[in-house]
Structure formats: structure tokens, C-alpha cells
Amino acid sequence: MVVSDLHLFRNISYGEQAWLQLQRRLSELDFVILNGDIFEFRWTVKETLEATEIAAIYWLKTQLRDFPELQFHYILGNHDSLDSFHLRLVQLAQSEERLSIFPAWARIGSTLIFHGDLPLFKPEQDIFRRKLKSINMRKGYLWKLSHKILFRPVIRRAATLFFNAPRCSRWLGRAFSMKQYPQLKGISSVFFGHTHSPFHNYRCQNITFHNTGAAVTGSKFRPLELRVPIVKIIGG
Ligand SMILES: [Mn+2]
Image 1 (cartoon, rainbow, N blue to C red):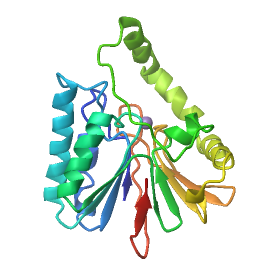
Image 2: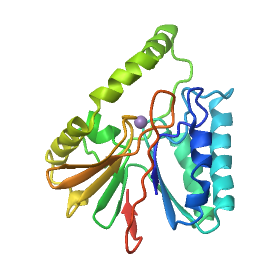
Image 3: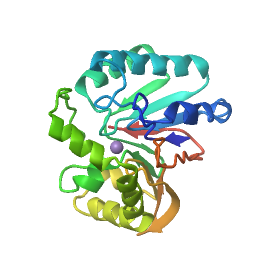
């Protein structure tokens, strides 16, 4: 199953309930792909960044314990690609063989999975390479206010309409054609998130695109099962 954009620890997230509703199905599956923005750091409801990172690692450890048969593959998004958190993830993955970490992308057979922010908004760069960042939690009042405005329900709904299947698929197709990417060889389907506008099975340029939505108010959460004969995952 591919899940994205839970945005856990953000005040507008319903990710915890959404995840709970997947429990029974997840216990029957072989693997889950956490496709970015699983946790929220900049807009955390917790006191500090460190407290949020510790809670995020604890959440992952709890899932690994509760689903003893499940393989977890974590692909970073733009909200959870902090160098400090990535370090914690890598450390956890070293002691936990059922967890693997991919900064930018993963591929299972002819299916490509990534968060989507890199090809959608930085298509001129290498869309398969993510630069990790550190965040300044003390951004100014105006910056915070502008973000508040941007995330008002009416703006979010407009964004949902804007980031529709034809537009996103066209943009991704354009990013794919900008360089010769070996990661794209033989790709027939693509899973992404990021835009918070879910759609499944949109066909464009011989690729089937799927967006798994987001568990934040005003958006729909639409995880999707990925059926493959053999789960051999590669990524970076
Ligand atoms: Mn995102």
C-alpha cells in the first residue's frame, strides 16, 4: 500500500485516525510505502523540533512493533526531509531490517514512487535527488501569516481544483522529458502525493498516474494498494 501526506503532529491533520482505519488491511499486506510528508516539523503542535523528531521515531517504532510482518519503505517529502530527522531515520533503519529509507524516490518493477514536489516544482533540477535541509523554527511574523493565509480552507480547495489529474500528469511528464533519467526506464505507473489532490488511474503519455491525497482538513486521503508479483525495491 502507498500512503502519503499524513502530516502527523500538525493541528489540521487527521492522519492518526486515517492511519488507524488502515490497520486491518495493513496487517494482511507485505509492505507499506510511506511516501513523504508523514510528519510535520515546521508546523508541529509540539514544543520543539527535537520533541517532534523523537515522537516521529517513536511512532515508527510503534508501527514496526504492531505490524511484525510488514515491510516499511519511507520516502521523504518536502516537510520531512530534515537532515537531523533523516539521520535518526537512518539510525533506526540500521537496527531494523524491515525499514528502509529513500530520500527522493523508489521503484518496484515498472512502478515509480516519489513524493512529487521535486518534479512538480523543481523540474529543471535532478528530480531524483533531494537536498536535505535544516529548518529555522523562528521564522518571522509575516512569513507565518502568509502561510496561514495560504492554508485557509478556501485557498486549499482552490489548490485542490488546480492540481487536477491532467495538469499534474502533464507537469510530471514534462519533468520526465527534461533529462535522460535512468530511473525512468520502463516505467508504466507513477505514485505521488504532495498536492493533496487525490486521483487514481489517470493515463497520460503511456504512464498511469496516481495521487494518494492527504490527511489534512479540506483534503481527501486516498491510499492505494500496489499489486506486484515480487517486491524488489530500489531507490535513492
Ligand atoms: Mn509535500
